[in-house]
Amino acid sequence: MKTYILLAFTGLFSFCMFAQTNPKIYEIIDNVSSERIEHDVRILANFGTRHTLSDTVSETRGIGAARRWIKAEFERISESCDNCLEVSYQKNFVEKGAGDRIFEDVWVVNVVAVKRGTKYPNSYIIMSGDIDSRVSDPNDNTSDAPGANDNASGMAGTLEAARVLKDYDFEHSIIFVGLSGEEQGLWGGKGLAAHAKENNWNIIGILNNDMIGNIKGVDGVISNRDFRIFSEPTPPTETERQRRARRFYGGEVDGISRQLARYVHNTTSTYMPEMNPIMVYRLDRFARGGHHRPFNDLGYAGIRIMEAHENYTQQHQDLRTEDGIEYGDVVKHVNFDYAAKLTAVNAINLASMAWAPPAPENVKIGGMVEPSARFTWDKVDGAAGYKIYWRETTSPTWDHSRYVGDVTEYTLKGIVIDNFFFGVAAVDEEGNESVVTFPSGVIRN
Image (tube, rainbow, N blue to C red; front, side, top):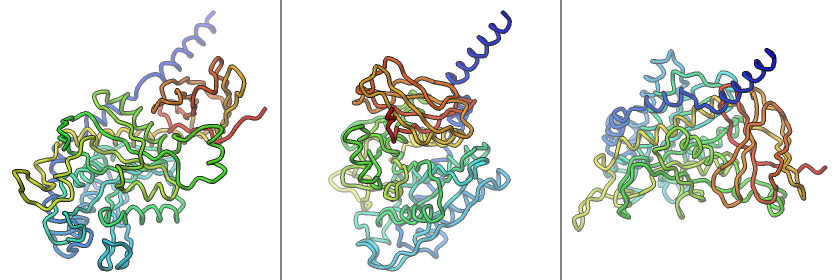
């Protein structure tokens, strides 16, 4: 009888452990400061212009002064946590004529701060903001371009996330990075993505933050809750065999970037229900681009997190007033409380992924003409168990799940494989979950 009670209690404890939320996540949310974000946005905007080809010598104006200040700020953050960040420049030389917006030779310089993981130091989750700014003419490198929202907001959010997460230990590494050259052709992202590939980085995903401070849209909508998550459906690096398999097994909207987007959606909905994450099934806005794309191009998972309601009179504009409309990306248009909320969205997802076990590999699915769906996967180091997710084929998010324990195969009885999409996540003892892995193979027997 005592043994039975003990086993029942152990099972209940295990259930509660994996059903509870992580109190450290709420602590992270509470520690994000809108005041510090405002301070950083104002400093970045006061550099006058941060055009990629602007002054690099001045201490008060231009891209050089901006990146030196960002590096110094990362170093100050690191000093406050016993040098817990590895801060450096990552430089990329771009020759004149490499693109229409590269009118002279230029060093595109990124500022990188690495919070090294304790267990998987070569496994990275990246949060990025753009350093550079521009006015109406993308090749005007002297006019005032404060770029308060585009993208001092994203850069300030990245600095703030580093401040908040610096005192925690994570199994995976987190990179906080200011990327340059976005407005001239995504050169900073191209350089860092190439560097990652050359050095065999395992990138879990990049969260690209580009404009996270505006709540008043040019469409007249005002919202401090809505934000968009852009993600491409499948990697451009997939093979022809993988493309053919999708015709029969599905997965047209289940690539690694889409799974990363769903992860952010789920974490935000769980811990910040006051926010409204909107999944957008596009790589980026129509015919436009952002700094997650170079990572996607090389086969890495990457998404764009940004405001839901843009105001085009405040983007890429010369500072002026016409017909009563004030044009220009100036500080007064930035809502710092909203920027803090989106910074918190990033911070909690960085932490969740960095605490979690690696995602399952070699996930296979079976159950053709059966009343059940069957799964197998490889055992994951550090996983206490696994969770199977499923959703209707028309749903954008994982809507159903079952924790199945420390096993490497499982059958969902009564679930017809034809009607749903499925995936598997690894879960540690504290309930931290990996990104969901979509099946890549079929169980034949």
